Length: 95
Image (cartoon, rainbow, N blue to C red; front, top):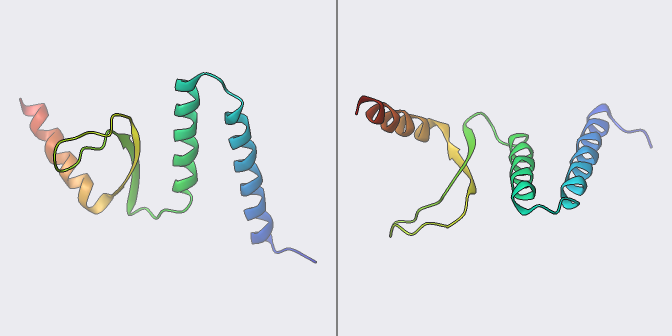
């Protein structure tokens, strides 16, 4: 069965992601392993998200002020968050 160029390309991407995932699994140092996993997931998500969304990292804080206690991957809507972030950044620079 002949595969289309798109199928070949998709398969190559998946093979590369699997190889990268397997190489991370072999690392024993927890901090480095965690950072590499975060980068891996970020790169993976970027392939599927439109420009409307951004990916960052940070500590999640809920409405009661409780934090997640760890750094998490955050997906945000650029149409909303960019304006909010710029506003807070501008205020902090003027202080």
